[in-house]
Image (cartoon, rainbow, N blue to C red; front, top):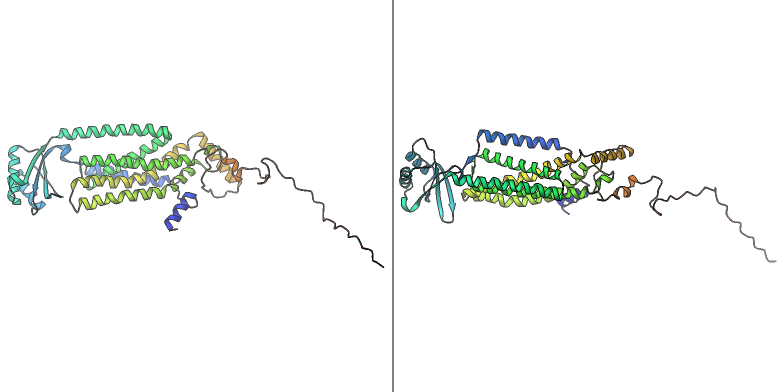
Length: 387
């Protein structure tokens, strides 16, 4: 078996364990730093909304030789110094083109910019340059629908997790979701990418991916903690930590498989092919998947464990576990997989009667036989000698 397979088997059996839940202060500190950096990026750079949200004019020039600088200079000369055009290079199956984005232009200014681009790029204005005006109302409709869908999604998630698991896991999942979205938006502001409808689609997609990974871990936590309060083998935090270790390799494998095609979209589709829509979508997906995997392991489960440890039943369980380990001479706590039933405590050797034995009927003890000293050997009869 490979080393990765040995590690996965050791994590699942509890032979190898990383303290994810117990070191929650470290993970919260890392997340706090990321959130502060994201907040700073939003204040310093702010989000750059595309023409679909802000409104404006978009001109497209089909040319194989015209450079981005030539198109930008020609459009800037025609518009004057007040309006700064944004030029993006696009590559598709139909050929290479340049996208010039500006504020909303009058018909006269649109004609001036079209003529300037035709002269600079050496193309026919009527055949190879297209112009369109996009109003901000379309972006407002998209934003309103996206927010409505987000609210409905969050309400449905809270109801589902509360019914299938419990409300504490719903809280942990929501904390992880807001954590993922905020960091993704902050990185968008940091790198200066435009927010387009593709960005909105990517953000909504990462919500589902992050939730999927979180639910996988929560399902294992539920399995390990079933009937845990009736025993004294381990605390809730230890059982939750075991669940995270058992699902760790699966989460990593799922994330790597998901990140590989998204990385291809981001680096090949955006920078090699020059597809702007792919760039906007792939960046949100790439950051969201990576951060979502982190939050499902280091944020969501520790939040649930802290909420559960406040319950009186779990506090009593922690006291029983501590008392049991103290009676054993203060041995180091060991994490093992719970039985999942109330009989686990009775089956545990540490909870049985010290005088009982493994064989025989339950609840009976074999009394030792009294010692009678060394046993005497029987006398052998002497045979008569024949005369």
